[in-house]
Image 1 (tube, one colour):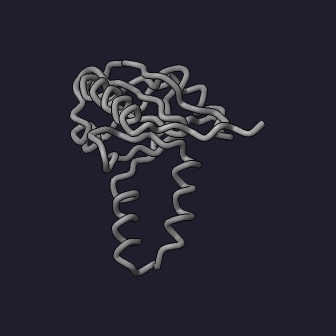
Image 2 (cartoon, rainbow, N blue to C red; image 1 turned 45 degrees about the vertical axis):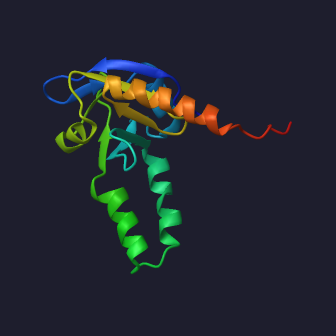
Length: 153
């Protein structure tokens, strides 16, 4: 399985374009049978950042959502949270994407942006907020004693 790993910094230009880090572009190509680098961008609902989902992984969210009653408040709320502010994008020939203005505003982005790998997705952050998030996550994991079960061979 291909993962998005590491933390990478880049610059956002005046047109809202930013280059996706080369290791992330390679992972996207491996995940996208068309090789287009298709992503779905959406505002994270728990942090001030942008979530970047490979297209297939984002569409896989429909399965669990479809198990909820179609006319329930839970379904409507979750569908609105996932889909209403989602933006499909593809990398251009230089490996750039255009970040929509509402997402730039949600994440509080300026000229510098940080791409933070989270395994199956990545996030785009304002640099100082990203540093705080990584430090807080490490501290909470340490304080909670969070570990993973041993892998079976």
